[in-house]
Image (cartoon, rainbow over all chains, first blue to last red; front, side, top):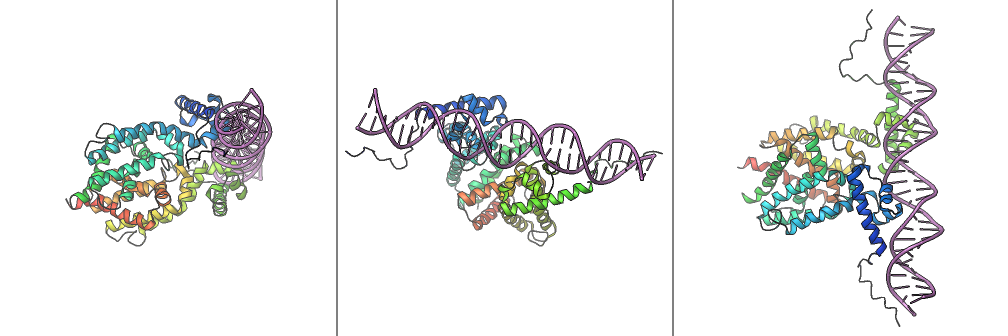
Length: 202
Length: 202
DNA sequence: AGACAAAGCGGACCGCAGTCCGTTTTTATT
DNA sequence: AATAAAAACGGACTGCGGTCCGCTTTGTCT
C-alpha cells in the first residue's frame, strides 16, 4: 500500500485552496472598489483588508506587497488587451500588414499606459517591468519587426521602440512638454517608419 | 529715511543663511558617507540626520523628501557630466561631427544611468524626470539632431531616443534580457543611424 | 548695543507598508 | 466520521517616511 501520492506533476501549482480563492476574489474586488473611490494613492493595505473582511496578513500572503496587489489589478485589463492583440480585429489584431499592426500597436499601448499611469506607477517594479506585460509586448514587437523585414538586433530594437511608450515617458511628454496625444501618435508613426525603412529602402 | 530694502531683485533667491549652508553641506556629506557604507536602500532619513548631527526636521527643510535628497546627491555627478558634454574633449564634447557626438552621448549616458541606477531609482520622480537631467539631455539631443540635419518632430524624436537610455530600461535589458553593455552600445549606434538616415538618404 | 522679525531647527508624533507567530480552516487519508 | 498535516488566517508589532509646532539662531534696522 504505497501512499498514492500521484506525483506532483513537476511544477504544477498545488492548486489553490477554496477559501484562498474566495479571499483573493474578495480582495481584488475590494481593491478595485477602493481605487475607484479614493484613487490609487488613497488605497491603503489596511483599508483593502478591512473592505474585504480579512486580516492584513492575508493580503500579503496573496499579493506579497502593495506593488504586487497593484500589478494584479493591472493584469485584469492587460489580459483583455492581449486578447485583442492576438485575436481581435485588425489592424491591432491579425489580418493587417505587419507595419500597420505595429503602428496600431503603438497607439493602443500609448492609450493604455496613459490611462493606467497611476496604477503602473504604483505597481512599480512589479508593474510595467518584469511582469507579463513586458515579455508579451516585447515578444509581439519582435515578431512584427521580423515580419516587416527588419534586420539587425531585433531584441534590442524592440525594447528601444517600446521604451518611449512607457507610462513615465508619456506622462512627461504630455504633462511637462505639453505634447498632445495626436502628436504622440504621429511621432510614433514617424519613429517606426524611420527604424523600419533603413532595411526597406537600402 | 526710506527703509533701504534695496529691491528684492524680483525672484532672486533670498540668499541662504550661514547655518543653513553649513547644515546642507554636512547633510550631503553624511548622506554620501551613508550611501557608500550601507548602499542606497540602507540609508534612512533618521540616520542621515543623526550622522550630520542635526534634527530630522532640518533634513526635510533642506531636501523636502527622501527623493529630494537623493536627487541632490545625483546632481553632483550630473553637473560634472554636463560640463564634459558642453566643454569637454570630443567626441562627447564639442569639436566632433554631430553624429559622432550623438553616438558618444548615448554611450556615456548609458554608463551613467547604469552606474547610478539605484540612486536614480531612489530619487524617483525628482530624479531622472523633471529635474535638471531631463531638460539638459533633451535640449542637447534636440540640438544634435538638428545639426545632423534631421527634419520632423525634433522634440518628440529626442525624447524617443532618450527613452531607451533610461536606467529602468537599461537595467531590464542587462539583468533580465542578458544583453551585454557592448551590445547595448552597438544597438544605440544602429538605432541612431536608422532614425537619422531617413533624412540623409531620401 | 539692543530689539525685532524671519528663517532655521529639533524631535515628538502620525500613518502606512511589511513581518511574525499562535490559531483556525481546509483537504487528503483511513 | 475521525485525524493529522498543510495551508491559510488575523492582528499585534516594528521601522521608516513625513509632518507639526514651540524654541533658537541669524541678520537687519535704529
